[in-house]
Amino acid sequence: MQHFSNNNDNQPLSKFELMLKTNSVYFFDSNEFEQIILYYVDTGKFSLAKKALNLGLSQHPSSVVLKLIHVELLILDEKLDKAEQILDHLKEIEPSNEDVYIQKAAIFSKKGKHQLAVDNLKIALLYADEDAEILSMIGMEYLFLEDFDTARFNFAKSLDVEYENYSSLYNVIYCFDMMKKHDEAIDYLKNYIEKDPYSEIAWHQLGRQHYIVYDYQKALQAFEYSILIDDQFIGAHLEKAKTLEELGHYKEAIVFYHKTMELDTPTSFAYLRIGKCYEKLNSIKDAIDFYNKTVSEDPLLDKGWLALADIYIGRKNFHKALFYVNKALSIDEENNLYWHKFAEINLKLNLFEEAARAYYKCIGLEDDRLEVYLALADVLHFLGDFHEAIIVLLDARETYKDQAEITYRLAGLHFLVQKEKEGLYFFELALKSDIDYLDLAEELFPTVIELDSVQLLIGKFKGMDQS
Image (tube, rainbow, N blue to C red; front, side, top):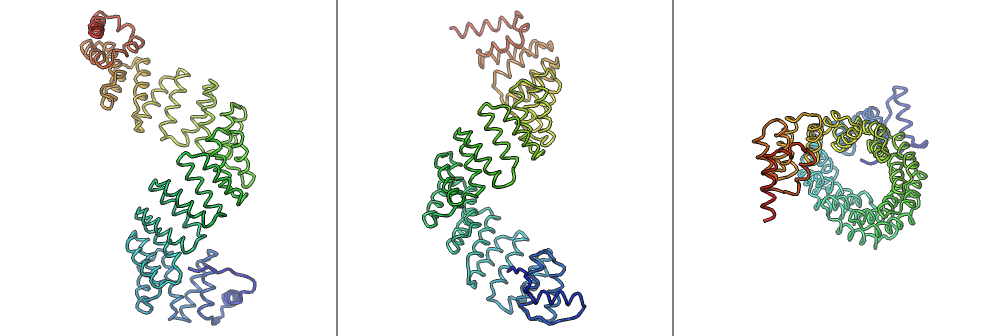
């Protein structure tokens, strides 16, 4: 659909609006109706667009242009079957009209029939005077089909026709990203820059690709070129700041994060990164200040609250750390890493029941790391919930079958629940697996280790180890 802008000299629009006010009926040619309808569509006044369309079709019932606009409005209203009927009729009248096939492709795309959309767009190409937009549309359909290589090929062809179509350039690089072909993306961008060395977008994208493959020096150079071409390009300043941060140039990174806020309104992301830089510089007061600005700017940014929690953990102010990690959890209670942090803080505060609850939550969120199972088992052990600790360790053993850290704990716990036979069984398995972890059992179960039956078993394995 073409676009049309109103101005004071637009007589057809003024005449049409006068007609609506006076209930008169004026005659307009089809081109004037097209301009009026498109103006109302562009300004979001769809009811007026439909009024103009209905009047236009009544005055010009054979106008293909107005019927195509009718199709577009029907597609916007999700009246796809009716739109398709009109297109089938138009195809009989003008079989070489590329817009008919473009609109049929739009309908197929909305129905999820992306290959049929591609087929129609390829027919449209045969009749079109300009290929760039249609090639880009074909690329988008292949994106829906997750055929990223073919999508990239079509976006690249579109770019060959219309070299400064940065939307297609972004899409080419997006396809490379999805295929994880970053070296190929770098080569493509270098070739593009040879033809257009003053493209700040291309330099920016080249920097991003170097950043992704950890080549931070080349990334920095590319972002600097982008800024030289356009010193108001916020994206380049932001990426340069991130790259400087990765290179450990924290003071310079802070300068460029501030630059992004000078060019546009401050963002929580920039505040957060400045806080991280100050933290790396061991300027904790400044770090806290910017983390507070982060959560003030965006109270729903959980990473800001977590950064504050980490700061206060480092300061051993666990009550404040608990307050801030609870803020993060209130935003994303399905984040197992936050629950793990919550558990660690509660352990420092001797709130063992809360720590156990958090570790259970981690496991419920499919955090099956060995450290989580062991931490939960140790907390339950401390609380005297020996049977529950055994259940947790047996669950862990299904994933980590031969881990001595699990088996020694199972051995000691079975003794604590008066199951000596099972305890000796697990001790024997543990000693066979790794006798070096015996120190762990001595630390966790000192009274069990002193039992004669256990000492006899240990002596047997130590003797075998020495021989």
